[in-house]
Image (cartoon, rainbow, N blue to C red; front, side, top):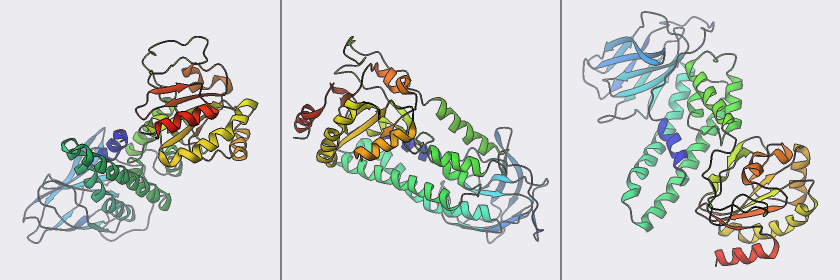
Length: 398
């Protein structure tokens, strides 16, 4: 189970960064522009309703009112709202996020839940970005609630129940990722995509980060939310190098690798053929062959049919190949993958040739070189290829 991914989604539940945006964009005049109004079903008369905006790193109250007898409300900020993320909070318990400014007149309708929590089904008109955001959260929140429920209960389950719960948890994580990715794809020019982006890992979804940050760079770059996510993405780029690892248990001088059987395999964080960052650690729980190779390496290319055969035979049982190329030419690298039929997804390369970060971290001095890693991330075999690889896999999957 990838708890880092879980934390990414859980962090989205806490809205502590609703952010102001860039300068006002000229739009046609709207009746009651600047007024935020609506109805909240299920609240008492004179329930306090607060409007907050982000300023200098904090959420600042900009206006407040109390509800009418039927849950109606209306708020007009004393100063014009700048385009950005703002928060309505009802009775200090129920937040609703808006993306608006003083040229719009959003109308919000929702039923409040019992106790604390988030309003899932809200209807917003008069603000296109806010309406989009409400639709996204309406689909996102139920899945996040299910994910939290499973995560909080998993420690109390039996071993068999944990296995079943983990499968459900992993399925939910994939569904959440796909939901956010599809929302970004369908609404590329909307600032609402920043909220979806926050639910994705910049390491795993670098392409989505680059796309959103680029599309909003001219209209939304001054907003704190944009800056926060841009910083998050840039930090992930700077950390793509192999992280510090504990020293190996023993050295294997002269054996083409710093790490030996029984050592924990250092993580590898690098770009794939699509320019998206992937991690070796994402494959934890599977048997993984780390294959150091290059398109220009004759022995590597001759070994590839053996890898293809092993992958086809054992992939359905939980076997993966993580190929690290020492190429410096991307086109030749990709053509070799296609020509040799290397059908697995995990191909990485930093296009630095022999200065490849992963090969340097592992102490690789010649290729081909393959390292077999167990489900727990510990090295099982080194210098393994051909028939020896299939023999070892037969034992592991027996």
